[in-house]
Amino acid sequence: MNYKIAVIPGDGIGPEIVAQAREVLDAAGKKFGFQLDYKELLMGGASIDVHGVPLTDETIEAARMSDAVLMGSIGGDAKTSPWYKLEPSKRPEAGLLKIRKSLNLFANLRPAYLYEELKAACPLRDEIIGEGFDMMIMRELTGGLYFGERKTVEENGVRKAIDTLTYDENEIRRIAKRGFDIARKRRKKVTSVDKANVLDSSRLWRAVVEEVAKDYPDVELSHMLVDNCAMQLVRDPAQFDVILTENMFGDILSDEASMVTGSIGMLSSASLNETKFGLYEPSHGSAPDIAGKDIANPIATILSAAMMLRFSLDLDEAADAIEQAVKQVLKNGYRTGDIMSEGCTQVGCREMGRLIKERI
Image 1 (cartoon, helix red, strand yellow):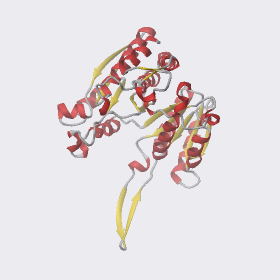
Image 2 (image 1 turned 90 degrees about the vertical axis):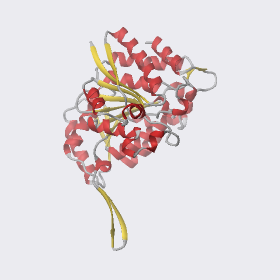
Image 3 (image 1 turned 30 degrees about the vertical axis):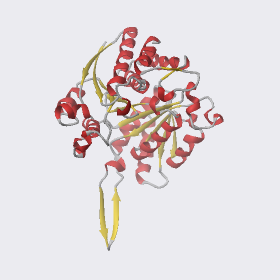
Image 4 (image 1 turned 60 degrees about the horizontal axis):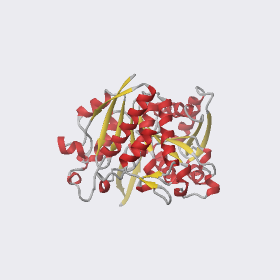
């Protein structure tokens, strides 16, 4: 099978980490009998340097025509880069917002997984960590408070700010379906997080999620209030499989979950639309200070590539092989500088990619 993959190396360490992800993907393709045809696209600072804008319509169209998009990292040093002397709509990160909107990427997935070998980096006590944890935060990305009407007015000499939180049932239904689909590929458990004791939008959220659950009798559904969920993430993270939630709650909880793992350089992410199409990228930034030095950690990008195989291309076996190869490399004591600990062997970006590729 052949698949068309749009590749956006991006800025900073982006080209280095994407190069390693491609090497690993090609090794998986050889082993499992598929081929990826790559088309490189410019976005962010790299696009500004060539086209004067962070994202062109041609790039959006090329991305749309592909089966999935694999991205590195976008942006530069805001203090020193000439990109940040431009107006906000022309800066690198504006390209990121535009591509998400243009491709209707409404579902954001962020896994939070604790590697046995990196337990020491986890801020939680050993008795809380237990056997470890493996969860997926499924966040609605294009609705809610961040996209509602807002204004600041003055009434009787007093300043007043208004933000509007709106969800319709179709927006809730499509993210819920995606959450249940993902749970089916995992441990078949969905925790829907809301604030239904206070908010009308959350009461609708809960009702629609309940309706969707009827089509997934094999998946267990439970509801949790957002304040309780924030507490449970640090009290007993192992209880969670898929956390399904709206935009602002997901924004906060996904950052909390990533910090609980203790190693953001390891965390992948995906943004999906209503089809199998998705954009896959590491959760970390472009780290311009270490760009070109061959010391960046490519693991988050490699794991994002594995997510791409799993969720956009339905190549679960190949995705499993990549994830197992990452675990094996860590087990064998190899580390990049950001996750280095005593008694381990420090390697660079290219070497880490090679070690993972060898173990597929």
